[in-house]
Amino acid sequence: MNLTVMDIFKDENNVNFILKQLVGVFLMYNKILIPTMGKYMEQLIDHAINFIDGRDAEIIALYVVDDSVPFLTPQTVKDEMIEELKLRGGYFLDKFEELIDLEDKPNISLKKVLKKGKPNEIIVDFAKEKNVEIIILGTGKNIIDKHILGSVSEKVVHHAPCDIFLVRTVDNEFTG
Amino acid sequence: MLDVIINVVILIASLMVVIKAADIFIENISLIGAALGVSQILLGVTASAIGTSLPEFGSALLATLNHSSNIGVGIVIGSNIWNVAGIFGITATVTGIVKADRKSLNRDGLVSVVTGVLLLFVMILAAEFTNPSTLSDGEVGIISHNFPIVVGSLIMVLLYLYYFRILIKDQRKDLSHIKERAIDERQEIIVDSSLMENGTVGVEEKEKIKLKNVILVTVSIVALGVACDFLIYSATELSRIVGIPETIMALFTLSIGTSIPELVVTLSSAMKGLHDLSLGTIFGSVTFNILIPIGLLSFFDNIHVETLSLYFDTPIMLLVIALAILLFKFNDMKLNRISGLLLIGFYIVYAYVRIFFL
Image (cartoon, rainbow over the protein chains, first blue to last red):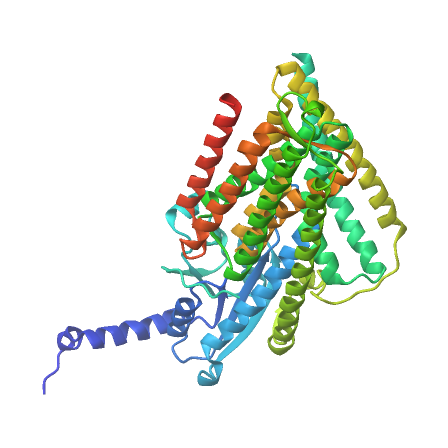
């Protein structure tokens, strides 16, 4: 059977396989940071697993307790908010671990980290400090919310020290 | 003109001091309470249930003591209408969503409605059992020590104590659930040192009473009293100079001003997804604002009820509470932007009618 190069490229499965191998060679991300606020975790994990593609890699799941409050917020309420977000963060990180299913993926090591501060700043600083190779983020809020409330992912995109993979996400929130 | 400017400056400055002093008072009284061995649950519930409402209570108290109880009643009812229509409306419009847990909405929402009905009932009692010759123009009754009005006031205070007990019981349940989860699942998480400083929920820490806390409690309570006095003084002066009725000043300027803590807490907690806190802040304030400032204060001094308070403001307050609950119930326990805009619209129409037509 005479198989030409063109024949190989005619088959879509072959093309996909070759592209995947090329991506694997050039973009061997071994340290992946996934900041999570509890939403669309499944989608982010799926993309991370696709990137890793069976290689040994480390995933760091990061939940940032947003401690910013407006002027005149009572201190006791601020403390209560931080405490509640801390518990919530712990719950989401545990949920993250459950979704990754580490028993089934021995090549992946997972670190769960809980930090406090402004989410975009903490994510960028953490990525710098830990020499993260890629940050996987969700696109987050819809266009109206982005205009009114601002977007963490947009801020991270502009200041990140490494590559970023932005996943077009849909709302799927785990509530604590 | 200079008079107006001076009084506006006094009003804003005293409002800031009232809010900050209430915050410092609650924070330090909690620390002293912890040192005395008072349960963290009791302190936590007290701080969140009363903390944001202290400015309303302080100003209503001072107004009543200064024999301007119409201002006190105005602050209470105005704050409640603003809390539900204005703050829920703004929060839902800005964040796009305010979620309610069915159990919390049933508990806090129902208590708010019952409280509102009780207030209406006490006002009707006051209207029925007050000698008309003792009333001034525009007044319908006096919540006094006379039987059976005093029974109504007593029921108000007892209802608040009962509600407080339910809050503590529920908080205890939530906490035991959190503790179980914390022990079972949290061991492998790397927690930043800045978060460790925050302490752990439910851990009973007993320290010695610090002199600093005692001084701050004393200073803050004095500052709260003095600032509330200035607040009421500047509001009445402004009413006199500009020619606005005192009740209008109380229903809008003072109630919106003293509700700033509720606004910032509800808005920021909804932005962070802490919907329980948003809901609890609003309905908790509504309940506290009615039962304690009116129920408790009526034991110390007569509270004069204006005709419009009984026939217009209080029914509107009940209506807006019911509207907010229904909006939650018929929208899958959520308030969205449309509901938010509807609540804001309701408030604007109420304010317009109240200021220009009544």
